Length: 328
Image 1 (cartoon, one colour):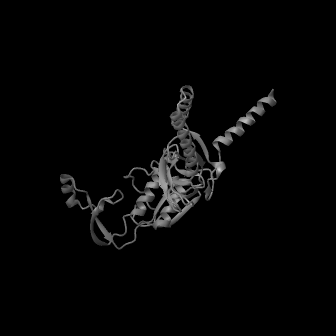
Image 2 (cartoon, one colour):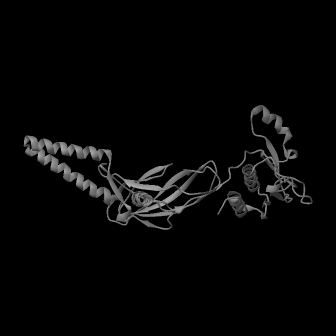
Image 3 (spheres, rainbow, N blue to C red):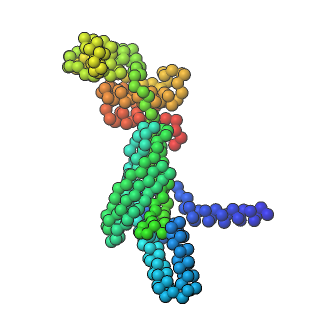
């Protein structure tokens, strides 16, 4: 009895694998050969087939010569449509391109390449996932770039859901499809905390405490207030006017002295904050420090990045925050 049940489960598994083609992420270029492309009638195709059977039965019953002509003509058109539907997708080349990092709570974009190396046009090629879909035409010996999106719910690596590549060209009577799981992970950074959180105090001996900006010696003009600006730099003469007119608050901008060094330490944040809240706040501080051209260091327990500044430091810190505590 147990052997019979195991045999049935094995046969069911074989049929399931043949129909749905479950695969892991596939690297590099993918070629849609005959064994990867499936075809089946749509509901309109079934209606078309039943209509032909009705025409044929009526033609036989009433001996209608023109009825036979119409029936066989429509049947031949259906067979030709089957050939074109299958050929429209067969021998396509699919290739993953890139997925730029995004912040949690937004949408990740995955760029893909479809290449047609045949001398005829591929019309109405659909790419679908559970979250998005797009349609494109591919001219002979040409390639097109398409973009699919997926919601970036949490930080870490986001894998594009399995793609269904399908077409119903030219008559919509049949559906030809194939499955593709590209190896194209997208890095999702933590969602930044809202603006307004004060920078941590600088270590003793590093300068003034909290950083004040690019410098504090030579007056360089006025600019809009930012949440990390020191209150002593606010242009108070214009503050009342700004409140009455709704204009942005202005602060004095200086050049000259080097700013204090910012240390963003995971372990010094309030114990009441959970891990995701800490990472969200550190992400906000990294973005603000980079926007203000600060030199800063990021400490994530045993990992220390910096002190440094600029794009390399920002990208390294955001990557470390995205992958902190994530299983490889």
